[in-house]
Length: 330
Image (cartoon, rainbow, N blue to C red; front, side, top):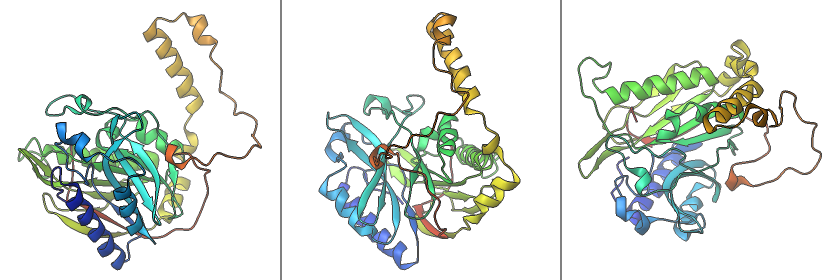
């Protein structure tokens, strides 16, 4: 989709209309692009269109999700008046979960850190679809730790919502656009290495002088593209997937089973100690996590807005819908 810059009410109405159209088409999951509710190049407008999690306008949009799930992106205002680029999972009339963008680019044409705060939590989330989702916002997926952590936290589908500007036009690129080639390579690699479905939803249209190229994709756990949207064209695209492909791929290629997070954590602690000048004996005092802790019989917390919910295995729906455009580089 191509949101109108700073016109929140109009974008809310457009989202609601697309949700109704997606429901009528049998969609189980609808994915909208980064800042689809506000437009991207907000700068000083960000505070004017910001919403809290309990904002009646966001809750009203959540009310349009009875019988389906949706990922929408907006400017979130915290209780202490910080602004975040956030993506919310809306399900059955509720705001189920909110992810705050972790990495804010400040290179090239990007200046996000000037206007927004960075999130500090990363969690996968159970969904009504019967699968666990891992949600990131654009630049988040240019940092390998994000999709890896989400997959290790049980995600079976990685979702990246993006506002990627079109750059590097050249005939030498596979599709004539360097950003599209970069995003395509990135998401297919993550899908294969994590044996997850990967959903990339990028916006189209123009904010001031910045053009966004679309090119949304759905990628199977094998790394093969199931669907690729055209470049620069707005549209609501329906894609059927077979979630049993996750099980099949993970049995045949048990990469996640063979990961060693305890080794990773131990070496990261060493690297952190070296970078901060801590003495080796101080680093060695950190707890060793080579063995899993004893099970805790206390009740599990239900804090879905922090992104933590008990991991479960449920049934498998097979339809989702993305309202984006086409394909990607940051």
